Image 1 (cartoon, rainbow, N blue to C red):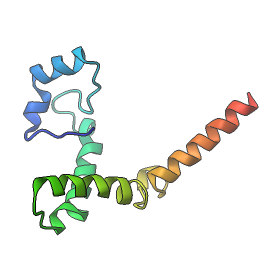
Image 2 (cartoon, rainbow, N blue to C red):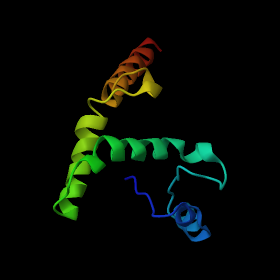
Image 3 (cartoon, rainbow, N blue to C red):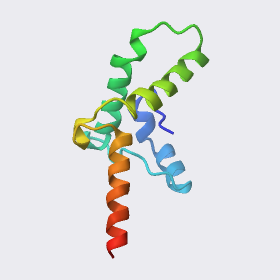
Length: 108
């Protein structure tokens, strides 16, 4: 599950770093001052906010959480094309990748 702390300093803190290491959690950002570490997460959250979240008024926090989950599953993963994977949806990309991997395994 993606969870973004309020401040980047919290995410980069020694306490969080130790907790992640102890629990086998791989973090998307490794070192302070390296902007590329967190670029994918920043891009995702920017898209989420501008294309979906800020365009609505949420009656409750629970409804906002449900709405975001639905948007990620339906729109972001199934219908929104991503330039980083050849302008296809993540679901289509995964199906193509799985199909190619199966063909390679059969050929071996």
